[in-house]
Length: 161
Image (cartoon, rainbow, N blue to C red; front, side):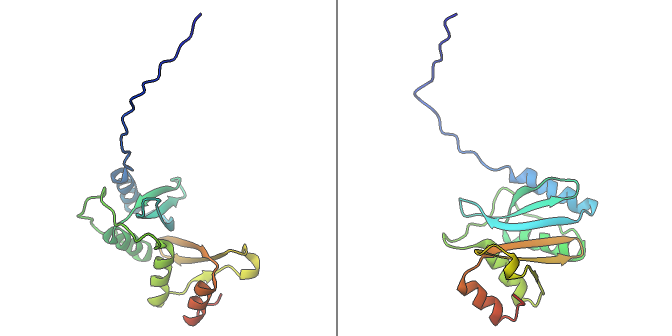
């Protein structure tokens, strides 16, 4: 038996696009069922904001966001009400190169008077600050870098870190 592989020297680079329309449909199904969600926010390598969403019955997956989808998700977590989305799920916002979406969301919670529950710093790894916000239909988890700037910000806003 003479086995031979031939590999083409010309490859076509097809840009793979994340199937966010399917992720959007899954989030809508989860909300319409009334699932309690666990959510973590982050930024993709291509600088798009996303939520990592999971529930008791659905394994976690990435859900890329625009401002309206992010607001609808938070609104659901707080009230249990599902809001209609009129936009295109395949289009998401793009962030600045140094912008940390998770930190920006955490600051929005703090600046809007929401209390967060923090893991004591002595129980945490040296380089992270962990917090969570429990709501009616789920929980948002945060894990941000433990920098002096971040600690100063939290203490200035009277967070019990």
